[in-house]
Structure formats: structure tokens, C-alpha cells
Length: 362
Ligand code: SF4
Image (cartoon, rainbow, N blue to C red; front, side, top):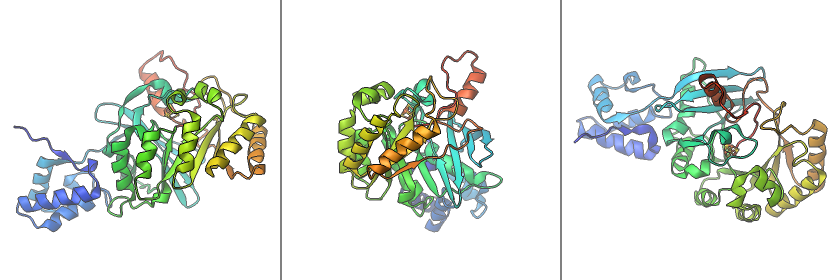
């Protein structure tokens, strides 16, 4: 019977160390050898077993027979004049996913993807237009952080946001493991308050997130303050209507953030601001207003800056805390699904959808 090697990067740090210490003993090595390997998964990443020069060569060979630690292939990178960098990774089955690194002073936020494609088809989103391909495995999500340690100038993020391709709460088993890897001192050791899950309001996933004891942050894509409008922008509103999402957000044990992409002439009128303020106050939510990239997307146009300013002022006047997110990476395809879509288009002449200048993800 063929025994498939275990992918060590799909395990939590605790599972990995237990597995590796037991394995070390089983092949006649001291248990600490297993701990040495475990440290090279996330804390001090090794590119492969061969790179673990601190281990005896025969032990490395035995490890390679029983375990894998797959890499993601970095196939493309774009750098913006504002310091934002976008990476396209290719997976073992040929799928491509995107990761965006956004520096801001001492902070470096990494925006990671959790699915290849997305089933939810938000009207303004390039990833949604691609359709759903598959869930990412834990190692393919955490690997987006890990790979950056192998750059000529390694990148070590201080913050993680699940705002890349896909709806993270629809891939909870993998995301659950990744949260542990990101947060655990034997993983990347990133504080839970520096890790944000962004969701359309996938209610079963919010329950699962709440069940975790760590203070991971929750952001909910609202994008419209009424069911009628939201249903036209986010088909998922039929499954989880706004009222149910707001009710759940109000019960969430930690402060939530509302994400709201500003679509010119669609959701940016004064009455939308008034209605959004009421919803935010119900939940004590912080509101992030997100300018659509210049040039528009999927038939949408950005709200003019003065309209965004007025919208924000109305929220503030209603005592709602609000920030207008700065658009980053305007000169590169630094938005959900764009780089992957560009690559696909080059490979597939005539790809139907218009994915230019998309700004937001779940
Ligand atoms: S915005 Fe997020 S949830 Fe909506 S289609 Fe895009 S990736 Fe999916």
C-alpha cells in the first residue's frame, strides 16, 4: 500500500511538532530533532528539507520520504510607485492566486487570497466574474506569507487581511488552521488584533470565528444600506439578507468594521449615508469607505472625491467613526483578481469579462 507523504504545511504548529517529534523517535533520532524541523516550517522558513543544514543528512532524507513542504511558485510581481507590491503565485494544479503587500509607515499589511476565484459574484468584482474554481488549502493561504521570506529582500508582514480573492468564511476549515499558523508564536506570531477576516456576512462562518478565543478582527462588506440595493450588488444578500447580517454583527463580541465601496451614482447619495449611519450605530461599527479605482469597474464609476468627503461627513455628524481608505497601487493591477485576470487574458484571447480597475473584495 502506498502511504502518501504528509504535507507539514497543512498542519497547525502544535500538530506539526507532535508529528515530527514522534517521527524523529521512530527513525532513531532524538525528539528535539523533530522540534528543529518544526521551527523551519514557519518561524524560520526553510525552502525544503535539503536547506535544513542543521540536521543530519540521513534524517533529512527520511523526512523527504514521509513529508512534503510544498512551495508556491512566484510567477509575477508588480510594484507600484507608492510601495504597494502585488504577487501572483501559481499553485501545483496550475491555478493562480494573488497577494498584495501594502506598506504604511512601520506597518506592512498583507492581503491574502483564500479561494481560487469566488462563487459570490459581487457586481463590481473581477474575482467574482471569474467564477469559483476551488478552495485553497491551508498551506496555499499561509504559504502566501511564507513565500515572502524567500525574496531577495524578505518581507515580514505586521498585519494580515483576508481581502484577496475569495470569501474566507466559505473556506473555514483551512482558514481556521491558517489563523492558528498566523497567530501562534510557533507560527508567524502575528497578534490576533492584527489579523482581519473580511466577509460578505457569511453567517455560519461568523459563528465559527466567534467561537475562537483569540481577538481576530471581523470586517463585513456592506456596500449598500438597503436590501433592495444590496441584492443588486451582492447576490449573496438573497441568502443572508442585510437585516440578518446586521443583527449578527451587533451580537459579535468584538467591534466590527463595515466595508463600503463607493460606487458613483449607485450607493453614494446622502440618504445612503444616513441609512448606513443608522446600521453602523446599531452595531457600534467602524466604517471604512473604499474609493473604487479610477477608471471604474464592470460598468461602475468611482464616486468623486467631494462626494466621498460629503458621505464621510454625514457619517461623522451622526457620531459614526469613519475612515476613507486610501487607494493603493493605482498604477498596478492592485485589486482583487486583476493580475490573475490579466494573465488569463493574455493566455486566453477574447476572455469575455471586463475586469479593469476593480477595487474591493469580500
Ligand atoms: S467581492 Fe469578495 S465575495 Fe464578492 S465576488 Fe469578489 S471575492 Fe467574492
